Image (tube, rainbow, N blue to C red; front, side, top):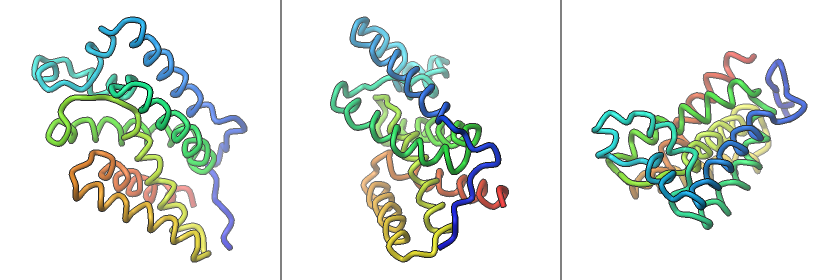
Length: 182
């Protein structure tokens, strides 16, 4: 078995994961107190057409589907995010999260024009984790898990679900990062 190749400055504490989740929790919590927060920050084609480009970024911090979205996204990003941050480091984690998220927000205008949430950015983290599993481990059972993730991404993409493409984007970025980390 090949040992993981962590980032040069392996964080003792997953600061990027915790800070992004804390900011998301604050913004998401405020949308329940002040519903206009969701309206002002979510993905909405007419708003972006009106030059409100910040929505490509801010849509990652609101949860348009409410509690069920929060109940899935927060634990998923907390778990996957810690692993990815330990492997890639905080700086690369932020790149994986935000590039995957913002790029998918753009794609979402064609597939799911209204909404918001951090699950698409978390899918990018999952793609980076999957490529690390394929490239840095020699155990077939680990490869099976990574291939399962990529198969899921294919199915999601086929059905025009916005969670498939960021898995592939995260995997591509992760592969480049891993090559540079050698």
